[in-house]
Image (tube, rainbow, N blue to C red; front, side, top):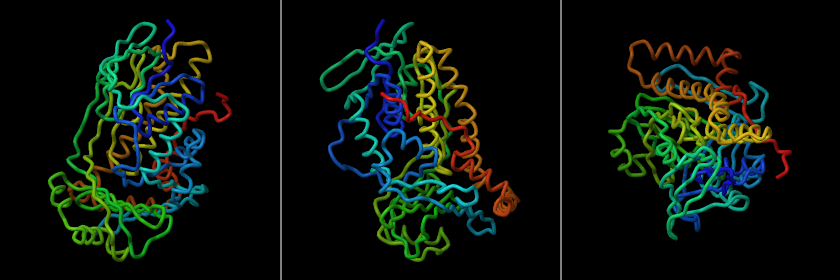
Length: 403
């Protein structure tokens, strides 16, 4: 049976749009289905600063999106990690491993707009369309969709779930996810600081959770404050003056006065991971596969590596006239991603628990470990590799492929 599309990507977020563009680079026919309506303007801006790793930058360049982002990004050449009220700290520098930057910070709304515009130009996108059911047949998957114009059915070789942690694709395919609630939230807001440190990101661990400060284009900074769930209402309810004063104290007043606070947003923190990320004619990428703690800004970069690896896998399957929806062939993609997923989950989850633990003497041990890392080139290279994804064999979409 000849399907309507080779692949249907459910979800037009950052990972879903990247996935669709990567598949188009290999001349696969792609439909993107998105529940939200067509974006009509700037709307409710996403103030987060997204940290893109060097491999993610390379992937975005291949997709043709980076030229639209380059003027809206700030390179991170230094990362400073510290433990509030203790002696431990670690400095990471791009020169430590001879690369131009450890990462790049881009405002989330700019990234969304840029990759969405390229996806609209190169892919078929159905906005305001929700998935209602999937029938996974031997040769094709039949998808039932609902939009303002009514129900529609289409067929595809492969359904790709890029629809976030509450993935309808994962649920419809019967793939199981496990969740652990950290009982924390991350409160995000943009601010000005009196004494900025150029091209430097700061992560400071406190008794209530980590604080992060990332530079944005134009001199602004994005702050991420993690706190226990029972503190969220109090913190969100603070006046701007009170909120900024608490940030100043949390960072040890090293940046002088914080001012001009933007809107605060709260994001619940959980760990969610799937038993399997593939099924017959189904694959999961991004938060549909794994939702992790924001320590080290790993989540989006992990999802982009999923998208690149899946595109590479499907192209390899098709190159030998294989069925891109066949479970045995898709299992190669799952096996390749397993080690990366497990390592990132272990890394972020360990950081999330170790730095808020009240176990006696653990604070001393972790601070000694931070100092050892700071003076040990080998340890520093290991940590930079973990933080940037450079220690992972990153999949890539071949930029020479002609569509």
